[in-house]
Length: 225
Ligand SMILES: *Cc1c(COP(=O)(O)O)cnc(C)c1O
Image (cartoon, rainbow, N blue to C red; front, side, top):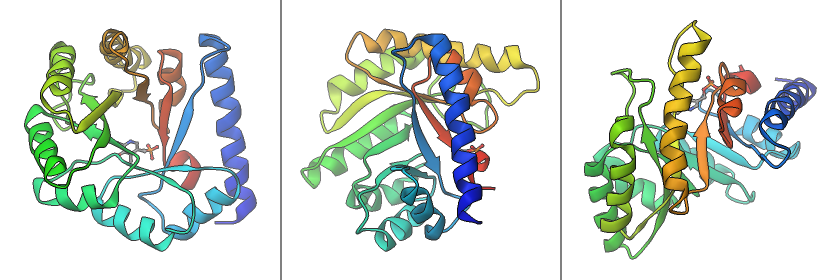
């Protein structure tokens, strides 16, 4: 893809985000994580050259490959995919700046013990399945708060920083909005215990997500496809 096209797309995203965030509050700042799972490292490099710093991948293998090719650049890598048990050690060794898709107590337990073994910590978000779709992972919103607090108490090597959620897959905007509202309610409660990140919104629904309180959006196709 030509550079100017990427710049145009990023500019358009910036202005959409500006519009949506200002409706929430002038103090509401939204961070963009560019999801590069559909593209190779040259696109990451181009996005970096026009100011993007945070990138997300959903396969450990791809995260490893791209972060190694680009290791000279000061990039911030986020892991946003389903983490299989046999990839936990690999993910730890890659030291992602944020693991956004911690989706169960069981995974937290395993991750914590591997982190302890290597005397390391990892920042993470609890994934909440507020879309209530069986093909999406995450804890049920009703259990979100308790699970969050349990992870904080029992697993000291995991540094929980907030929640991540995906909007419902629906043509009906009010259903999408509702799923973000449900996730935001969990965020509001954990915020009182120091959580700062509410990661919601992808290419098709980030404006709605921001208006419902998201302060981190994960954007792939709107930038790259
Ligand atoms: C792929 C993916 C995204 C980005 O999706 P787009 O619709 O292309 O913006 C965001 N979050 C997660 C968890 C993803 O897997």
